[in-house]
Length: 470
Ligand code: SAH
Image 1 (cartoon, rainbow, N blue to C red):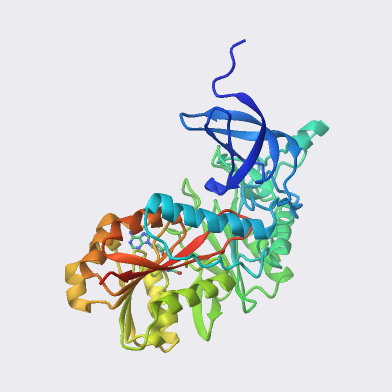
Image 2 (cartoon, helix red, strand yellow; image 1 turned 90 degrees about the horizontal axis):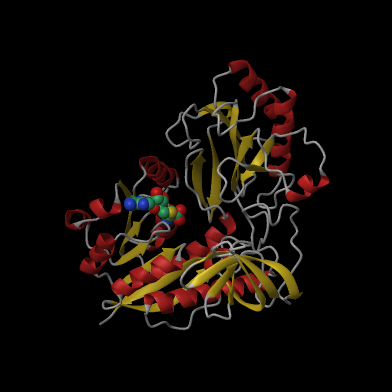
């Protein structure tokens, strides 16, 4: 029988690296790289490949001949099925080691820039329960695990409240316990699921676009405030109210109990009206005496404790003495701008989302900060010559773009201005490396500080300080 294209058993390979989108890496005898989704560097494994390309294979380890010293037992019962926390089987020190390595490799290989000694990555004091925001989906068609199938029992309960199975838009894993957000996150999610079933509310069916309950969002803040948002598909006043009232009664500590009725095809709430059922429509997060108001649609860094560490690095790199004009590009709700404002003469924040800028202005005002100004618009359009003529030539630019990095016109504009210092915060060191290469003629990389915002995942944040040459 002809072998199915790309499927092949590669025996006895040693896993040598980890990082590439969270996968482990080995070398096949034919020289190709193998990306493996369930191994740890140091393991010796047989790999069943399921994809073959010119330069690499993708596969799963199907037999283990030696287990790595870097291994540790995952604490979560959903490990391996759930898409989150994929690095739980590797000890935290090793996670940090491979994150550090990835940053250095990307900056060197993709950026080709000369690097100073890279500071050791700042690990997170909390390695679990560090997220302040979670979004769970309802489904009446839950994912059935292989173990359940093997048991061969009839599966009565098909409802789920949990996460999407990686790569399957219509399959949801029902969560028993999630280790990402602290209590009462699990208690609220479990209660909502049970109560919804008791009230006979329909869980959503993505394929048929039918059912009542769509998503549940939970936000917690470091001062103990809690936001709960239930997203319904249908306007069914009685049933919605019954569920919301039950949640309120069971968890009187909830600060903000909200809901959305969304009958669109997709379940993002950003273009929807958020209705307040009980309490206020927002919670507060605090950082070094600053208060940030967070509503259902606000962006806020999801690991609050590490966000503080990250911002302290940014402030230190900025080296402000009180006289500088600072630009904070991709400012979101203006948190970095406000965090550095007392050390600067003035800070100007720019951001694409109008609601975020409205929140930034409101927060700055209630924090009593009057030397910040915020502007809305697409960076490549707003951040132009006229803008700089109006608002002044910045002495320092802080930039914190999304995963894609900066648009090349934005990079060019920074080069046109050529401030003495640029602090580049990135959640994707590959695109950061690409942008640094474009800036290499004008700027030297003076400091590099990786920060771990997301333990148990491969994601890594990186802060770079650039100084103008000459
Ligand atoms: N610095 C902020 C948020 C950074 S996240 C903080 O620490 O909280 C990146 C931000 O870039 C998001 O708020 C996103 O809305 C914004 N953004 C993405 N693309 C943009 C663009 N083309 N122009 C302006 N802002 C953009």
